[in-house]
Amino acid sequence: MEPVGMDATTTLETVSSLEQNCVTEEKVDKPSDCKIPKTESGDCENKAETPSEVIEVKVVYNKNKYNVNAPSNTTIADFKKQLQGLVGVPVSMQKLMYKGLLQDNQTLISSGITKGAKIMLVGSTLNDVLAVSYVTKQDVAEAEKAASTKEPLSKQKIHRKVLDKGIPDDVMPGIKSKNESLPPVPLSGMLNKHSGKVRLTFKLEADQLWLSTKERTEKLPMGSIKNIVSEPIEGHEEYHVMGLQLGPTEASRYWIYWVPAQYIEAIKNAVLGQWQLF
Image 1 (cartoon, rainbow, N blue to C red):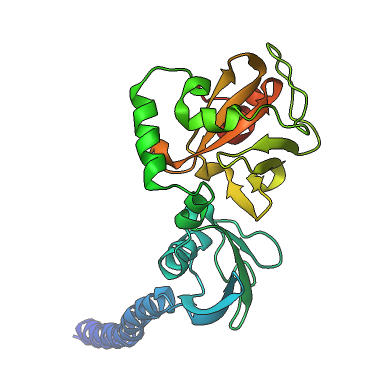
Image 2 (cartoon, rainbow, N blue to C red):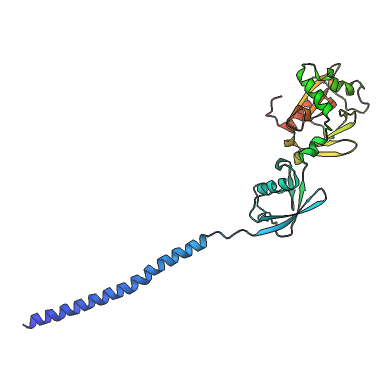
């Protein structure tokens, strides 16, 4: 009987020990189970995006100041779209300056722009660009008539009004059947359709063509010039009639007369890119 008693006692102790172990495991497991959702909840809280701060900046354009609000993580490309609706300057014609030229892939905050910062906007509205050519209803009618004929440009009435006055005294020398690089100085001495003097300055580092007359200088982004057409002037093949297309139609061409022939290809390459077919 004694061995049986001992076995019973041993069995009771073993059961008691197992029960204690189970209680201990439950106490250990429960807090561990409780910590899991807390950790996950914490991760979710950390992953939640903090709303970007809206900042107010001053945009200066043509001596006018505009207060503009935008989230600090707005890209410069999106900020330009916002400005297009505000001032009317197409995105492709905008250049934004803040401690240097701003790039489209930057954000306001990565550019160092904070509340109250002053951003300079350089650019022309489409109306400003087209105004350079002083398009009238008569011009449109003559352009449409000229487009319907196959007469050389220098024979068309719209151009004869200027060409018949002869070669300007101060025009740069022209060379036919030869291509040269753009000179280091502006192309000058040429005429527009009103017989006013025209000067072309190529600002390649800024991707701009400066079109200057006696009255004003228009800084045209290269991308705003849709096409360039040109033909030699009959009887003076060392010079060309050249049209810069500033809008969607032929009526929006800005005509320039007595352009030295040796620079025509270089002008097209600089403005349109060498991949263009001429």
